Structures are given as structure tokens and as C-alpha cells.
Amino acid sequence: MKNVGIESDSEQDYLKLYNLGGGAAKNIKIEIYIGEQDVLQKKYVNIQPSNEGYLLPINRDVFSEIEKTIKNNGYESDLNVKISYQHNVSRKTQVLYLNGIIDSFNVYNDESIYELQFFSKN
Image (cartoon, rainbow, N blue to C red; front, side, top):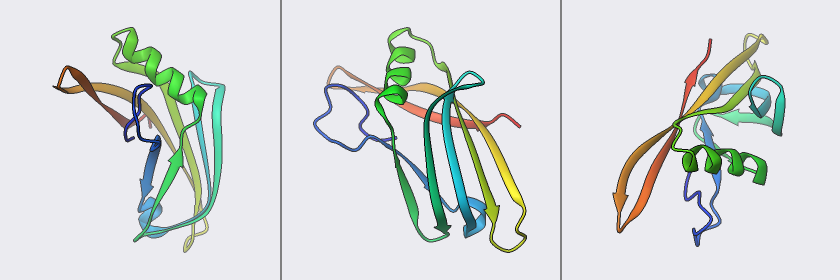
């Protein structure tokens, strides 16, 4: 995620996906949700080539959950991502479940820098 913040001058609030399924992913469905069921955002992508990335813009609800976690000094967010896709060769549907953790990275010019990391829940 890049430049996420209310004070940010940049309009680049997104997650970047790349090389999903070894470059053979198609019919990709991405769901960002809180807890187990509260879906904040859904996105559908037709195909994800190995040499290209996909920028997934985040909506206001996702942004608010990230901001709330930071303000509460909590680093383990209840933000989860489910990615399902078909492998272009095997035709099998793959499903990934990821949980978000916010890590305090550094401070520059009195501005805190955070890193949003996702780890597998499987």
C-alpha cells in the first residue's frame, strides 16, 4: 500500500498484486473484509500475467479500518483478504486467505511510517 493517509497529497491508495499463480491466474476474485463476514470491498480481475502487477484501489471502508487500527495503536488488524483464482493450466480453483498486520516502520520529519503486511491464514 502506498501513501495511505488523510494528510497525503498523493492519490495513490492501493494494494499491488503481482505474479499471482505463477503468472497463470485468471478469473480472480478479491474480497477485503473485517472479521469473518463483513465484506468491505470486492474486485474482479480477468487475468494476471506474470510480468505485470495489478493495482487494487482501496475504498473508504478499507481505508477507515486501517486508520482505526493505527489510531488505536493496534498492529494486528481485523482486516482480511480472500483471493480466489483459477490456474490457467490446471484449471483448479485456488483460494488464499490473508490477515493484515500493521507494523510501525520508521519516523521521518515527525511523520510515522507504517507497513501493511499480509500473512497466510491457511
